[in-house]
Image 1 (tube, rainbow, N blue to C red):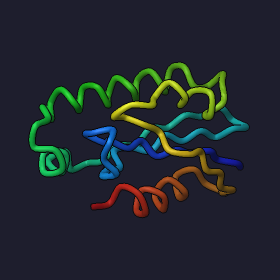
Image 2: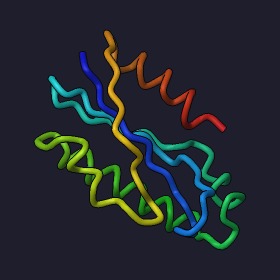
Image 3: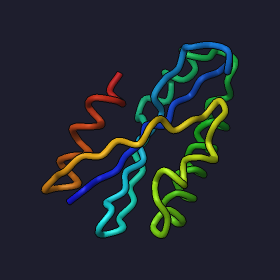
Image 4: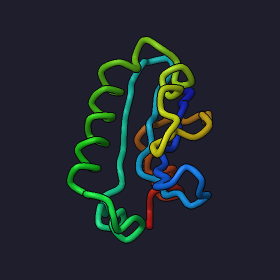
Length: 115
């Protein structure tokens, strides 16, 4: 199966190069399965940006998750992520071939979300 994915990053100041990976949005292209995985240690956000309201930020991310899982099935990942181009931004879409979505998401999570 062919899987597309993009990393959701947070940059507190658009003029800064400093950013942190927050989530990964996956799409199994053939089966139209969408999966959104977030960091598990939300405290790291406050360490990264001490002015942020972590609870509010988490609610925003959960809203993105809910919206993506409902609406991404019928459009491409590239088209979907275009709307996010501010402090929250999805990075370039990458593609991987995999036999199992579960195994691939585990490997990608270890690469991009483990802190």
